[in-house]
Length: 163
Image 1: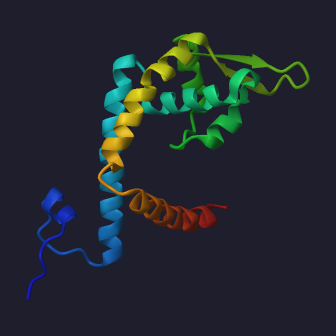
Image 2: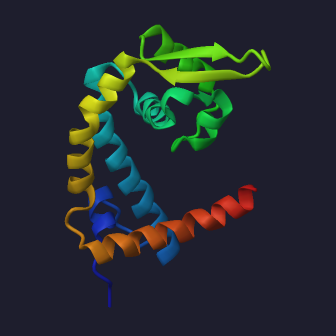
């Protein structure tokens, strides 16, 4: 007896069954992440920034007046950014961020959000909250907590292998 096709099989129009539940879960997770990435990109691009640049600006907003070293920003980003210097160059050129070398160690560069950068992140706050609600608002609070725990389990294994 053939099994009914799953939602992800329908979405990607896959006729053959997945080889395992693990394969199906990974495809569903990657598909979901991409759908969310596209929706969030749609929100930030009209402001002339990328999703990665938005992430940097949020990190810098959280750092406050103290700023943050470049490599710490890189390590805190949601999406890995090997070209953090280039990313910061673009933000600085657009007037959203500024950088300063520290007097004690000229090799270390601290980054700060500018008023213009702060304005763009503040302007996006409500739209991002609404996007979060669209993304997971159909789940109960308990289901959202369960999803967080499951995703943490997936990340933990990968982070352990990486480190």
